Image (cartoon, rainbow, N blue to C red; front, side, top):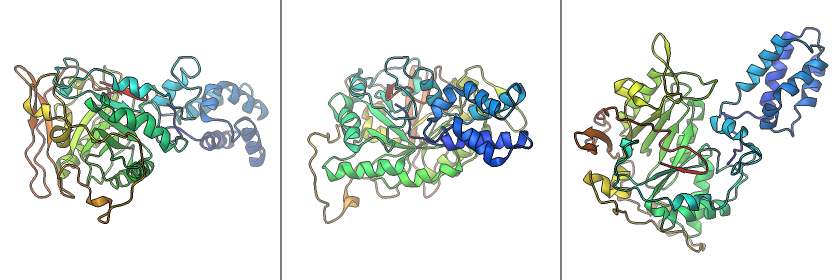
Length: 433
């Protein structure tokens, strides 16, 4: 749990700059160097952002007292609002409220912390392949889907590759772990690429049931998709959550796009036009689209409206054309042969990937890493998606026809099914659904 920092969680410098900018604008006659010294005294470089947020009222009171503004409530409120608006990570705020107080949570969010054995417990969860899921109909017949690091960034630079191999790869490739599908979102895709190469050097192929996902929020972070595309793995995804603005995704080699809105007390509305634009991009490029949750506030062309569900995950409240929760064809072909049969016995399984085992170095073959084959897919080949639709007897997978040339056939719109996605899964180092 915890995170080494991203655009959703500010640095101490960003917090200090925000305070200085407002004070410099509001307080006349205060020398800039004196203002910098005052703010630096109370928000020093070695103070963690979560600590600043936790003690924000006390910190602001001390700063304003030195600035000869001890009873300026309007300025205090403005500073408080501005600083809190920087902390947009729902996982960070959730952890901050429990850090050091609830068992299983780290002492602070700013320092990534491993909890050995937690992934093993997730891997031991019962197999759901072939089962009906009344509360999450879009997952009918599929294996259990487990998301890694929902409340932190497990690929933060402070976590060693040896630790990741022991706490992530080993459980995923264990006998029990092979029964599930694991999603691994990250804002550090370059480090994920390095980790995959490190594994390969020691004789470990990337597990077929582990999906690397690059996390993107706006156009400035789209470069992460290109970084992830370097991975030589059979299936790759992109998570655009929270979606802050219109984005143009480089979807070459990307099989799956997950979209979500922003949640929390200071969440900004998701513009429906952004979601529809991503839907069109996915249809054109042949990538599957999964709209997990739209956030509580949606914006149309002329107005903003509030959904009853605080996460915007109940798609019965969504426009009908956005009620889409697709899965990549690679899930169906390699990881979920049971899904192609619509109804299968609960014991259905898929071929296990190569396990981590005892890692030993190996040399690069003369053909290079690019010669390795995963699923017979030619470079650049676009795979079709499939979607779960309601039928008189439940839900069944419906294939979308193969794309021709550069154009994919429009996705079959999903009918509203009862339940919530919660980003397919949600939770801690490993959380399943």
